[in-house]
Length: 296
Image (spheres, rainbow, N blue to C red):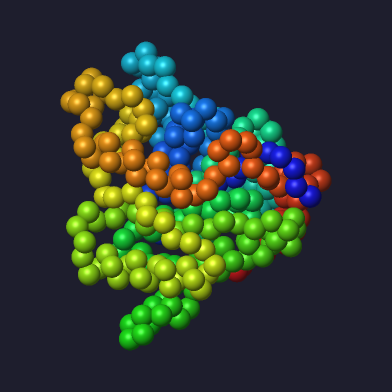
């Protein structure tokens, strides 16, 4: 069954360094500035980049006496017991409790996933209304999505991650009849046109056609994102001389516009909460749990 609740955005890719956490946090802060209520969830127990970003923001605001917008944040660690079955049960209970805490309290729930396959990664993907997969503008990163025939340039075999997503989509459809809008986001785009850039665009479009997803332009390669992380700030915050060490640059302004364009391309329900799965109690989440196996 479905009902009104939080629109779930999952940011996922099994390639480390693809910009998942930066994308997730900037989406969260942008939506906060648009007047929406937002929760963020970090299920990457190893890196915890999103959690560090949130913590940096809170510490910076407290130390500088700033009034900043903050999402409700959860960090969900992996269970460390000897039994895989018991670990997955404990993780499911933790995940369900966190979802239940916020699903009717916020407009958007943004979940950042690790660059490797875990039980909570699969649970998160099954619940996605919108799945955002940042892909660096590199042929190496495209290989994480699919193997490409070097002669024809056609995708020949889907990656483990692509199969994980396709299974999540099938399970979501079987449980509640809803589809997952899967969006491949070109990330760290070179600002100079090149043969590699054009080749990446062509290959991504071929992969998207095969997987039933869509490709949108994301964010160019910019130093500003690395410089903002220690303070937990984003390009959507009001940044003055003291915070930036100078006036906002053209790169800062361009990055802000790129994220606005990205959000528009995601077609999010910006005026009212989206339709979401019933996530608590004897809900569809239990159905996902029962359908998930240990291997793809």
